[in-house]
Image 1 (cartoon, rainbow, N blue to C red):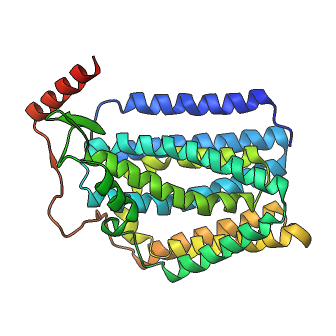
Image 2 (image 1 turned 60 degrees about the vertical axis):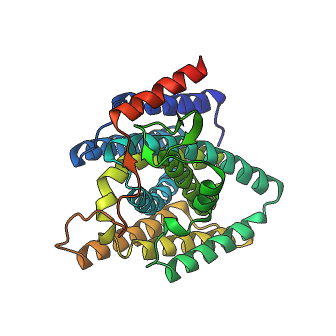
Image 3 (image 1 turned 90 degrees about the horizontal axis):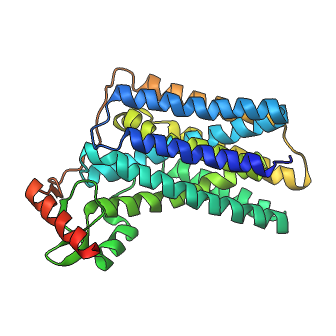
Length: 337
């Protein structure tokens, strides 16, 4: 697949424009409701699907099927990522008006990190094709581990990343609007929102290590791997506000995701020396596994409504008063001048 430079530039430019539009649309902090989240989710899914159709038309059915297989893998794994975000934001009791900004920054960081991971993975495969066996073994192990731990969830209090952050970075006991860093009493301190961002980025690294080899299992085209990742990740914020309170209903989703990872690992191992499973067949298997796991989950939990994730402790951080926020702002500007 020969991808001209202008197409790379157009895709990256389009992503930057979409991020800018999203940021401008949410420049003022406010709690995002279900209707707004549903609209934005539909917009991002339409963008991802539309790009796949365009790729199919321009480069043929194989490229289109590979893109949709990769996009479906990334999108489904993103749902699990969203549920982890819900646990983190609930643990920190982040005010709903501040959640979009920290997730926007998290998604921006995720795009950069995944771009680096994809470039490294492509270089490894180009230099040593049999590294695909390593990727396949990793996917099989990850799928097995996900099956075993399907009922376990992230506990932020036990996170090594969070413990290291608290040891190394002085942090305030209050949120100062959407700011990540403030100057209080002459000292620069992180706000809890920066700790949330660090934890969000750390968890995305873990998900990227699982998901990117999975997409390389259905295509070796770097352009398709990157775009499938990018369009899936771009809609994560909207998906969070739409699905975060429904995580208790997707009880069998992790089973479906685990089986998808196992399937892609087997396909990748077979591809090196034996047989290349047709992309259309692989896409059909992935779609069936995910559809069955979601339908099975919703059937098993029918009648249950939305239920925010909660932690037993009291609210860990307060919101700074307007006077405190204004004072911190003046000190910050004077320090910069």
